[in-house]
Amino acid sequence: MKLKVILEPSEEGGYTVMAPSLPGCISEGESREEAIRNIREAIELYLEPVEDDQTFSPGAELMELAV
Image (cartoon, rainbow, N blue to C red; front, top):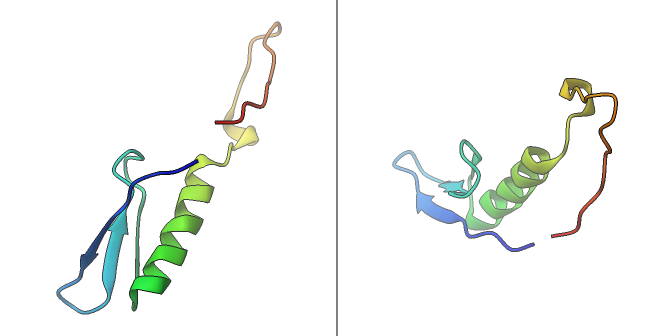
């Protein structure tokens, strides 16, 4: 999966990076490389299902779909 991210220099130094297609998915880092690593991890966590928070009706099926 490919997502566009926006990388901006921070006024305090370092970088802020966000994934516009994932509301609230924002990270930062001291260098461009660190910021990119951090947003990659944030995206993975954002997209990771939280099974404890999900409730399904009795006839529902849980499926895995590659995108």
